[in-house]
Amino acid sequence: MDHKRRSVVRALMKVVGPKSAENYEKAIYDMCSRVAEKDEVECDAVYASLSYEKVGQFVASRSREEREAVFADIRGDVCGWKSAIYKPQYENKMRLLKRSREKPKAVKGDRKCKAKGCDSDEFYVWSQQTRSGDEGMTHYFQCAKCGKRGREK
Ligand SMILES: [Zn+2]
Image (cartoon, rainbow, N blue to C red; front, side, top):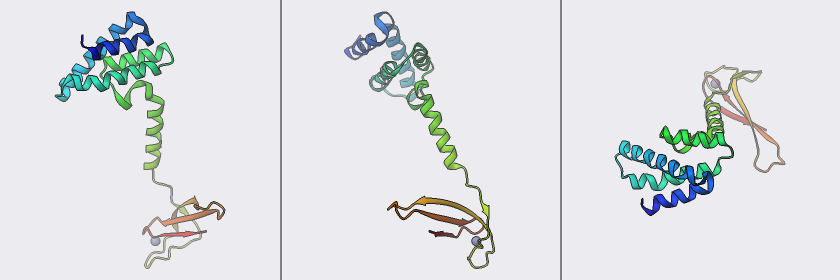
């Protein structure tokens, strides 16, 4: 076993004990071989980054369940941002991403669009704190029909 693999075993020993450390390292090495084969790259290069990612995830695990989730990821070749240990963060990111993709609802009001040839009374409206803070909010609107934008304080 080369020194890189031995140093991973040593790092794992502190987290999972000497008995499991070699098994876990073997699983990580096998995962790296599979990933390397799939991506047609050198196993060494994959191992250099992924082994430490997985060791880091074992270190960050706060419970037996989390350690088992890391181990399940290793067996399933899951790495990076999609690893089970980042699930709450990943879901939160996806939620934010989804929300940012949703179009705001257009609202009808007593305002009429001033664009030529447009008589729409439906607007997307949103507000933003002005940079200086003490000036309060600036309100923006955009015509739902022609897209003309405007703002008012
Ligand atoms: Zn308009």
